[in-house]
Length: 120
Image 1: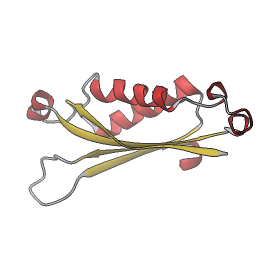
Image 2 (image 1 turned 120 degrees about the vertical axis):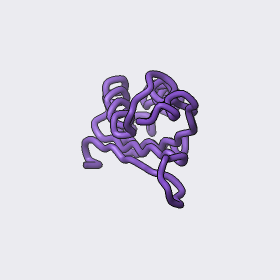
Image 3 (image 1 turned 180 degrees about the horizontal axis):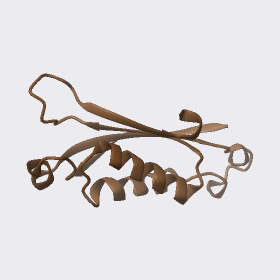
């Protein structure tokens, strides 16, 4: 079993529950881990026998820069569903960080983690 990790992908999106977040937009950061059996790719050294990281990135990018959602929980669910459907992945972990949150206090970011399969 192998784990493919895409760490700290950065996107500008218009997600949030407040009107100002939806109008102005902000940065979001995404980590993604998937469990795959890449033993064949390990033997053949052929990309066709694995999952192309570029393709995973593009699926995440489409969600993060596309339709605005109110909640990070919804964003995580959509990413998980699309990656699972597109690549036939059973185990996935997605963390979405939002550094600019409307909280009257000091913090680095809010993060929501969505998991399916082995990660649950």
